[in-house]
Structures are given as structure tokens and as C-alpha cells.
Image (tube, rainbow over the protein chains, first blue to last red):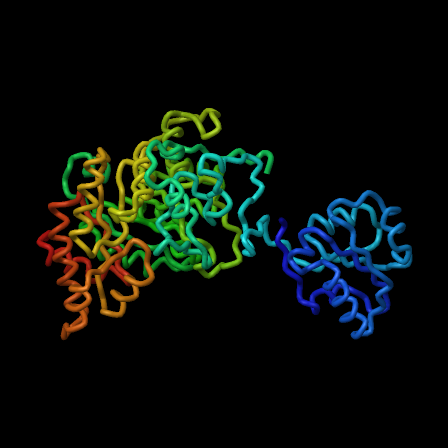
Length: 202
Length: 290
């Protein structure tokens, strides 16, 4: 799941001319789960802009903003998009970039894309994959120090964790979690030199 | 005697940390180095420590060398990718720098450029390996390096015996070519001694220079205990500082006692005062070095 946060309304309206006809596109996958681009958020943004005197001509909620077939497929869903001067996309950066490929009017992304994370047992996990293009998580039992260690330490922990917590942000040190996962085991798959990453597919 | 020769001779080694200036006025940093002239076998030059912007370690190491000191240029993996690391190592060699200390580096959000993009393309073990390859005449990718290259390469560790994975990494650092280790500050001599026994039992045979940070106040001792990973100030030291009439004086006395113990346990010391080296000569005298 792509983790996003909504930009402040002030930043969004600073990108829109008050006289323009605004159209909104949400995203019913990650952004809906994050509460940044689903049905309720589209309605809330529409109401907020209308109250401020902006002219919102309509909206659509595609299954995934990052997977838009064509401009025509958007028109099929809501033909008011044809009158739009600017389109606000309530999705991750990938979604707004895909929308921009089928439109020739300005596209404004209403979120900040934070990381590739996940949702498990009700908890949001941030930055659990950084899409390095050279996955080595199997060496660490499925955990990924490339992503979850802020310093991407592949050969062991840095000296910065204290009481099992990472020095950056309030989270567990991934190397402490790896140590727990492999506790009592011998011949650890990472006890020898683990080579540097190939970033060509990054 | 050169730093590497002294390391290899088995004699007790003294290194001192001298940070570069936070700008271009080098007078304070050069004066700081002057306090330890003739005392230190080599001088560590920090690389934007605490992620605070300073003059580059490569430049200030060169200036210290021109002033007659033997620098140990510190290099973090925070600000350079693999091209930058290898290129700066070659550049340092070209400028006459012959000692280098590799570390991951404090994260940018701790410093005064908190929005900086952290690099960490290589980890510290990779960087040590890259330097070992340069010594053999190739880069990390296998391309050839023209001309001679050699450096005495060091690494760092927290001397905490129960940190098994940190010790695993220390082992990897040695295998990747580290020739000496400088540790986080030591206050708990028994714990450090246990660490030394543990690594020697595991066959990690490399000179270890114990980190020494002279205590200046009981607040500083408590702060380090609570906030600095790898540092453990025992309760009896906290108590001595708390009840001392003159905390600076007591701090020097405690530090001198620790240094005297290190003579029998480690291969040397690495002195990192919070402020300047003004008191370092006195500290070494009190530790029976002068």
C-alpha cells in the first residue's frame, strides 16, 4: 500500500485560480484506505472548496488513479471533466502522474506520498519497502533492513539504537527484530558479508 | 613513529579527536590541535559530526598535515554514494592522507541540515571493503585504479558485550579490512574488559583504542547514560561526580583512573573531549603518561 498524507488546504488552493473550473479525481485503493482520496475525502474537499467560493464542476472515484486507461474513460464516468481548467488528484504521486499523462490541463496532487507501507492487525507500517529493485529480504527472514533501517545497514546494526529503539523516529530497530526472529539459531544467513545493492532497477 | 607502525608495534597508542571549524576560520581548530601536539600519535578529523555542517574532513585533515600532524580522516557513509566515497578516498591519498576511519554517520535529522537527503548507498562494511579493493588496484565495480594506493583503515564499535549483532558486524569489519577499531566512550571498565575478553575469545585480533570522554559534570554523565547509545556510566561514578566539591577536577581524576586501567586492557585510547583539548595534557600527566 502506498502511504499518503493530505496536503494542507491552504497549499492546495494556492495552486488553483479562483475563476477556474475545478474537477476532482480520487483513488479507491491506497488513498481511500489512508483516508486521503476516498469517497468521504472527495466530498469534504468539494465542500471546503465550494465554501471558499471555488467552482467544483464534478468528481470521479476510479478504482485506481494509477491505472487510468484513457481520457475517454474519464469522460465516460463524468463528462463534466471536459469543462475543467484544473484537475485535483487525491492519490499518491503515481496516481497524479498517470492522470497527467491523459490530460493536457494542469493537474494538482493533493497529497504527499510518504512510503510503500502496509496495514496489518490494524496498524499502519511505514517504509517497509523502498522499491530498491534488488530484493534481499529473504536473507533476513522476510524483514528488510534496506527499507526499515534508515541507514540501510545490510551487514548488522549501526551503533545508534537504544533499548531496542531506532535512533531515528519512534520505532523498533529492525536489527533488533531480526535478532528476535533468528534467536537461538545458528548459521545465520547474514553472518557473512552481504554485498552492496545494485541500484540500476531502482 | 607513524601511527600505523605504532599500531603494529604493539605499543600503547594515543589518538585525539579534533573537529574541523564550522566555517572557514580555522584558528580555533588549529589551536585545539596545538594542545595535543607531541601528545597524540594521530589526530582524528571528524566528518560533519552530529550531522552538523563543518569544513570537510578531507580539507581539514590536509591542513593539519601541513601543520605537522598525522591525521586520521573520518568518513561517513551518510553524504556520499559509492562513487563519492571511493573518489574522496583516492583524493585524500593524493593529498597525502594515510589514515582513514569509516562509520555509518549520524542521521541528518539530528543536525543543522535536517531536511538533507540521507545517502547510505554503502554501509560501513561495504565502504571498508571498497577501500580494501582500492588497495588491490580495483574499484568496487571491478574497474582498474591507476597508481599506488594504501591507507591504514579503521572502523568503530560500541564496546557492549551483550550486543551480539554489533559484535557480528565488528567481525565483518575486520574481515573487510579494518586495521584498528576506535570505540564509543568507556566509563564501565568491567563491562569493557568483558567486551575485550569476548572479542578475543571469538578470534577478533585487531588493535582496539578505547574511547575516552573526560567527564565535566554529573549532568553530563547522566545525560550520556540516558541518551547516548553504547555509553554506560556506572552508578558509583555518578555518585562520585555528584558529591565532588570540584566536578571538573573529579572528572579528570575519574578519567585518569579509567585510562590507567585501559593500559592493561586495550591497545590504546582515543580522547574525545566535549570542548577543547586544553585539559588533555593534564589528563595524560595524571594518567602517568608524561
